[in-house]
Image (cartoon, rainbow, N blue to C red; front, side, top):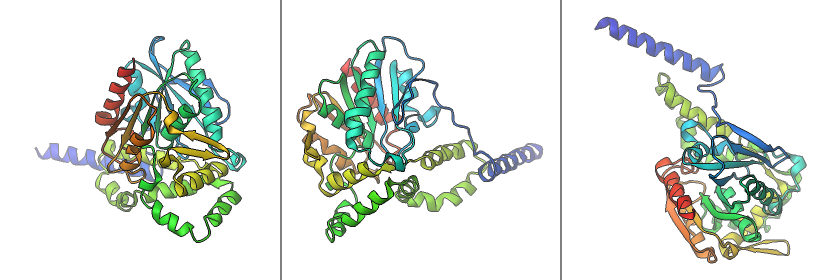
Length: 350
């Protein structure tokens, strides 16, 4: 018995030492295992990939990431991969990847995605599936962009839209009302000028802001690591989140100023009509079925901000609203809730 205890203790100490080295000086714990995919187009800010493993008659699903988040949010790890889940459930998932955003991209605005990047991707996916319509699945602001794209051009081959953790009313977003009060001092001109001068919001600022929403996790991180040095699986899951946070890109200047002015300050999206210059895009013009998923514990997009879509998506033949546990990222990888809702919703569209 003593020999067994000594062996077990030795193994634990060895594992802890190996994990400590990997976290401190090595390449981390658990190398990324992306789901195999084929690149169909590699144009800047619109790389289109088709995940391998689907059949020719499988329904197409286009995964739409938000800006300021890496596209691999849909494929974090084998156990946390919505892309892999879709392949395994008999569908053909595709992904549009915007790549890095730099100062040179400062002129890109909402129109770039709504009129160009996403419609092009939707048409390419449909053509790749023999002209069949496409189900859009967006996370966070990606869901908002998917809905606005569907509203802006009803001729696009879109069968349905799913928006997970997508803000559809900034009146319900935590801290926005307080932010508006501060901006009334100068009408938001100082912040707008600063963003324009910088050409956007940098990746460093985005990463800091994202971590700030989970400040308790950051504070507890050293104790968490020390407590789990011998648990490689737990540390590997932590590293998945770390890699995601460390890869957050930024926003183009024009896009963020539109987000700031039209969405945060004026809440166009909550009123149901987004104004982009002289143009009006109404959510009531979405004419396909919609699934909305909100998170009661989401510190970035309040569940009520997602649920608000029930009052603005009046042209849709069906709008479902569901909730899932977890953080903003957590609801995207919630297999027992979000993925289950999505599976049923997509089956009902067949």
